[in-house]
Length: 139
Image (cartoon, rainbow, N blue to C red):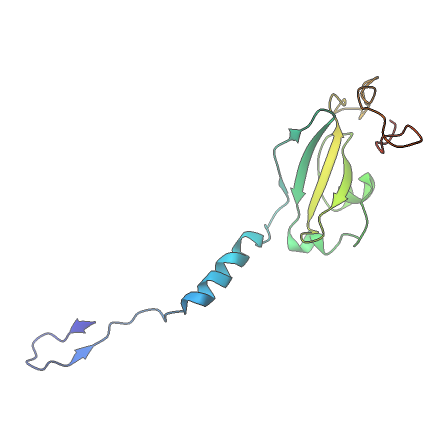
């Protein structure tokens, strides 16, 4: 509030200020902000465990609409929508709350030019289950 200059009156006038938004509304808007879609495809840094290296790719809204829903994408499909990365990556999981984020993995040591997995990569994985399989696809 600003007191009117040159006046003996105690009348006050307000400067033009942006409309105040209730605090509760602000919290809701802030909670939504992190899910804002990018304008171009974004690639994460690589991260890994003992067997795989991983990365995730965030698609912009326009690209996300072009993807098949509820299933993993083939290499041809993710390349067709504009995802660019070296050979050997597979779309391995869907994060249902954020289907515009594609999760990729490839065995550590995969040749990025050919996509060939080094011999013995899965030999260090202990067998699980009655049939001796680990659930990890043989390459």
